[in-house]
Length: 413
Length: 129
Image (tube, rainbow over all chains, first blue to last red; front, side):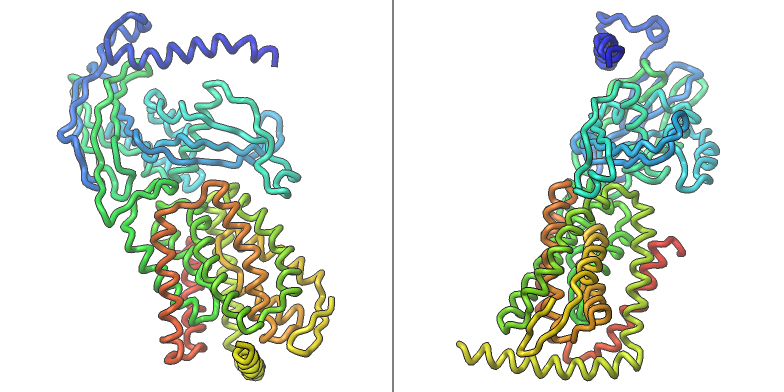
């Protein structure tokens, strides 16, 4: 702690300088005296061929950079930030212990991508071969693009020390001290991966650099992104950056930006999907939640699994509520039994959502896949002749009781 | 625990019911579904309760779980208002349309289709295709 306190003024000074350099170069005031190496190199220029996109599209970037240097383009959504979180349970190489620390930021840009020179494509392909185990920080270093990594590094990251006990009571754990800039940057890279998942979403080889230093790039902004201002900075070195160029991504109804999910979606898709699933769910005699969730995940990979789970749950809640109301009218609920088991389920419901944000999308899909297989087996069992024969008897008793109950309820009115 | 329902008495093993309910609740709130398809077999098979007792009471038990997990998901910022507004009316509408269709289709066929659909979805999530 003492050491840390001693370092604080230095860190603060470093931060001021770092922040200052960005603006100093762009304004070219020179008042803050950028380091000599940077002074020797002129900042690159940047020009966009249009200032507006309509739900994604392609934009041409061109400019002049110092000759013989690779040019990286850092692109991010400036108006909208999203949440990113990661639960670190990998064994620490130095201590051999599992840290169990939960990292969380609210400041992740809704869109963040680095465009690298075209000739680096083979390196990206190589990283893709690693499958899901790719490392964002290694990739950036490999491409030399770590010099262009600036915006998410400034995101304010909170970290919580998680314990088994904390998980049981459903809390995130104790909030730890803020990290220094270097650590913050390192963790932010992991969060970038946790948020954007695939390599294609965070890097692309698109910049064509000529020997004289002029560069052009056709950058493609995909559909379904956050609306608002986007910024592009051409980066040659850590301190040699262009002024940010801005373009606007417009989206119009029926596309709606989902603030928490960080994506734009044609609002009619989930509407009709939900309609179909709800009808099917009722016909099947079960809520539609367990079909809706995997369907949404499969059809809209851009939606984070936490948002899917968190938004489908309240939708299911209301159909359950109306079901309970209907049953209670004819006194078809045993309150003692329902509340008894309900109390146990209450505890489970308290813990579950916490676990959702601790697991990655892949773990979510894996576990959900198996749950669905079990469910399918249960359903299949319910269509076997033995079950049907038993069920027929049960159903007729059910109907009889229901009739009696309805008549009693009517009699009272 | 003894419970009474429409003039009949049932013996319920609450230990099994509560542990099973607890596990199902964690699972269903984690993945954001109701949990009915798991609760009903638990109560009919493991607790040996008749169907007519289970239909309403399991719904009540699940309701506890869903309301708490809704609250928790909201607290963790997992809830998206516009997304919800797009799905919610559709779910209500579906609830009205479904009974009209229900008379015309056999539940057995629906279940078998659901079975197939679930397997396909599961394989998709598991990355088989």
